[in-house]
Image (cartoon, rainbow, N blue to C red; front, side, top):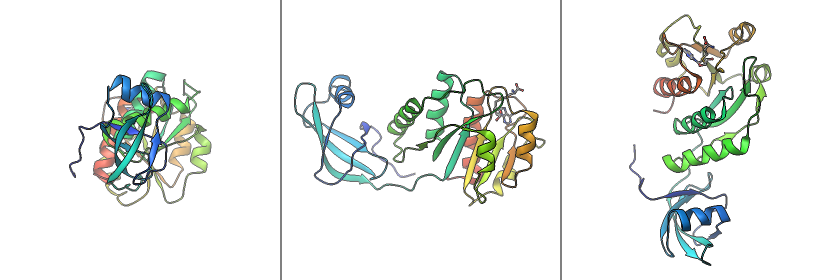
Length: 245
Ligand code: SAH
C-alpha cells in the first residue's frame, strides 16, 4: 500500500477544492481546529471533500475563534468509490455507530440500512450515520465517504436489487461453513453484502433470499456472532476473497 502522511490531521470540508481557493470554516470546524487541536495561524492540515482528492491546506485565522483554510496543493487524487453496497439492519445506537465506522474502514462504498422482520431499531438517524462515516474517513485516510442511503424494507431492497450485482448474505443457518469458495467465484463482480439484525432473518426472509439469482449465502463459522462483529468478519473475508485487497 502506498505510504501517505497519516500523522497530519485530516478534516472533511464540504466545499469545492482547487489551488489557491479559500474555504471558510463553520463554527464546529473552527472550534475543532482552534480550540480542540489548538492549531495556530499558518498551521497545516489535510482536507478532503469526498470528490476532489486530498489537499494540503493552511489555517488562516480571521478572529479569535474563526478562520479559513487556504488550499495549497493536491496531495492525493480522488480514488474511484468502492463498488460495494453494505446493507444492514439498524442496531441500537452505540453498536450502530461502531458498525458504520467499521464498515467505512473496511471499504464499504454505500451504506444501506434495511428494515427486516426482526429489526428492533426501526428508526435510523441519517445525519448521525453520515457524521460517523465522515469521522471514520477522516481517521483512516479514506477519501471517498460512502453514500448514506435512506432505510428501505428488505423486500423492496431484494426486489429492486441490480441484476448483475451479487448479494452476499451472511446467515448463521448457511449449510457450508467455509465462505471462501463461494466468495472466490464472485471476483470482478459488483458486490453487495447483507447482515441481519440481532434477531436474525425470519423463515420467509430466508426463502425470498434463497430464490434470488444474485444471492450468495455465506457462513461466518460455527459460532453465532453479534451483528456488529459479523459485519467486520464478513467484510474481511469478502475483501480478501473477492474485494479490493
Ligand atoms: N438471531 C440469531 C443470530 C443473529 S446474529 C440467533 O440468535 O440465533 C445477527 C446477524 O449476524 C445474522 O443475521 C447474520 O447476518 C450475521 N451472523 C452472525 N453469526 C453468523 C455466522 N456464524 N455466519 C453467518 N452470519 C452470521
